[in-house]
Every structure is written in C-alpha cells, then in structure tokens.
Image 1 (tube, rainbow, N blue to C red):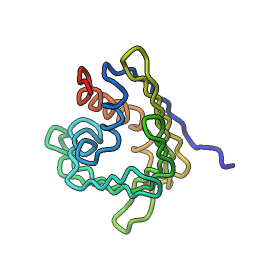
Image 2: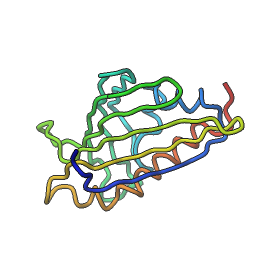
Image 3: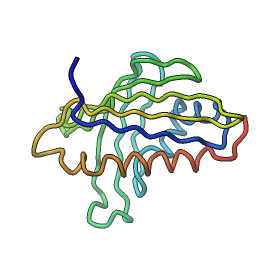
Image 4: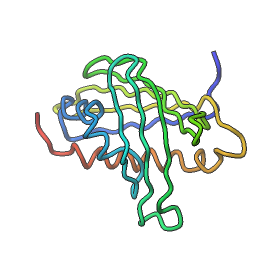
Length: 161
C-alpha cells in the first residue's frame, strides 16, 4: 500500500438531518453550488454519485480572488464506494489541459447521526503530486477544503427533511 504524501481530516457537525447532508453530497445541482473554496463557481459539474460514477468539475475563480480571477481549475475523479446515508469514497484529481493528473487524492466522507444533527468526517489522502506544478495546491489544501465545507454548511444548516 502506498503511503500518502499528505493527509487531511475535517470533522464537522451540521445542524441538519443526515438525509439533507447526504443529498448535498450526492445531488449534482447542489454540489455545483457549494463545491470549491470561496470565490469559486463551477460552470462544469458532472457528479454521478454511484459506484464507478464520474466526477468532472471545472472551478472558475471569480473576481473576489483578485489576480487569480478567470483561472479555471479542472478536476476529475471516480466514485469507488457509495453506501447510502453512510459513506462516499472517490478519487479527486486536479488535472491539466491534457487531462493528466497533477494531484491525485483519495477522499472518504462518513456520515453519522448525532441527536438530529449530522456528523461528517472527511478524509483526504494525497497520493500523487507532480513536482513543480502542485506546491501551491498543497499549501492551500487545508484552507480550500475548509472553505468548501463551510459553504456546504451554509447550504444545509437549519434545513429539515
């Protein structure tokens, strides 16, 4: 088994039932609204939350990101495991214009009930990083994932099934 280059774990408890949080992770239109760090939109979002389902997202940096505005950050992946209401496992790869992976991640997301709320544990393991092209991605990884999960929280908090 290959040892990850870097690992990140984020645990959050959302004031929303598991059905709502699960849907936010599995409904393509909902994912399109919250995926990516602050200041990013997703003009392309294919999110097929089923075993062997595709992931294709192009994140677009907005004007609030200053000099990065207009940059496109494509990614792809494949769902490896989908256990309804319980677990998602997928690959998440930052890719270049030739569709070659610059950064390869293995992601798992586990969901449990906690007194009407949902505890989510997200684990990201960086398995490959192309030297000279991914240093900024790795530096911003924790901040980017946390901002993304903050946006997810804003999408689900206080909602009821």
